[in-house]
Length: 486
Image 1 (cartoon, rainbow, N blue to C red):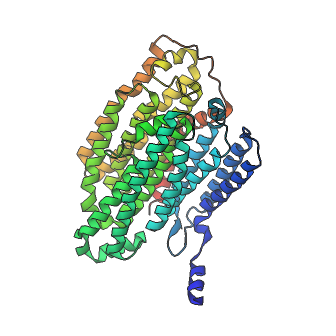
Image 2: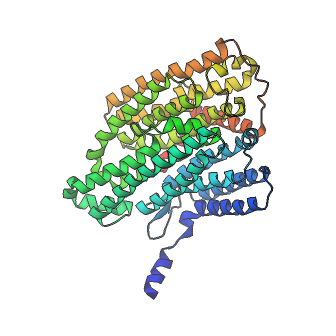
Image 3: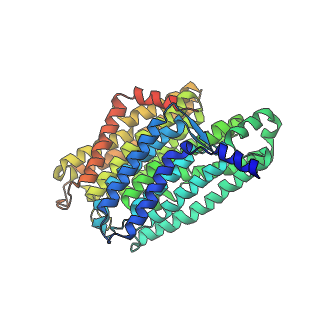
């Protein structure tokens, strides 16, 4: 027994989970603090949350090029995890910035909101740093449970109740697929360590065609693809995005999506890389289906949150192209695209937060008629974010898509790149339609309720700066993304 304890203590290395540990402790401290604060006093938890995220980012950056491994190979703070950690911290920070005034406007100034955002970020970090299937599953559960509560946070609104319930039921169902797939892979390989799984399959090629191994791979893919919102596992997305609080919708479209991609790529490229012939064709088809479904259904949407939800589905399809390519350009492009998408999508949602009325009203195309005349600065900032979502140069969206499609061409997937470009052209219609309503329709509202709240305004400005910086000088961030590859 003494030897077992000694071995366990030697394998513990808290440096491997230090960013998520600091953030988790901060979230628990905030929960305790809220118990002693009166209802409605949310300014202090808001700023303390931002301080905790800044500390987490600093600790993560300190670990660059100094990888730490701990807990018997269950967690790693390598460049790959650090890059994604910064994406999660950025998404959470911008979400919190736009949330405080929004919660007061909607009548839900509850301090527990901020620890929940932090806990979901902790789960995302565990997914990115997890080098064992059990660690990844633990991170997924921490992330998901927090998001179930946040999606249904507005208890008095039926849409929010529906969003929370749908996300919970479908999320729990997909988690069952993921866990069963992990169990099958463990049954075949005898290990849950991602690297050891890869070594096993490289040494036992005959097991690649084992029905249990193929079934485990398919079930795990189903669980991950649900979280990413890849068609046909995307049907929860529009209802959940529309019913959730707008800042949480922005967060779900960036942070958790990036976390699912982080875990998905580590498992499939490291653990199941030798099975690439089995899954690459499937992902090729799903990438095309996702781009087509997301873009063509978005055309018919009049609610801007639902339109951005289907747009998010399409962008998940673009990112999946990089995973199909499975080369240095493609995989590093996915990391770059996750960061770029966080800037441009959260920026668009920040404008919706500022322009919306109480009760999530006015978030339709008709509601934005004449917005460009009444609130020209906000309209210009939204236009920049929409141009980036379209993939118009010199924006982050254009650069990200360029790298992803270049990776596909480099890997020989010419038709996949062509279909990606064509789908990106289709998206011009529904993004430009928003601009048509803003600039070429007579205003039906005076937008007198729109006020430039400091937090949401700062979030929007940071988003636009990020969009333009990554579009004009992307080489530095792309170099970091290449360094982050495992």
